[in-house]
Length: 108
Image (cartoon, rainbow, N blue to C red; front, side):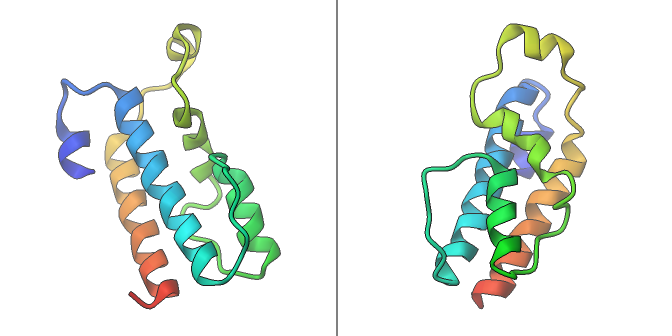
């Protein structure tokens, strides 16, 4: 993630997509390890709600992780014009923190 985000030739849409995917997969790994049902769901907010409903500790950044959901699908041109630039350093840090959280809960 760090290499991808540090490359200025790679657009925010691509960096955001990979960050969203990394976090989605980690949330789902925790859900699977705890025996929760998994659906084809890309909305990080919905996944966080499922964790909270099951009484599972939410990951770092849970209060704004859902903002990355928009990157789960291709952004339309109009959305790109309105989008704030992605703070790549914050996103890289968040992906790392969510990974550490998931590893701890899965006992990797």
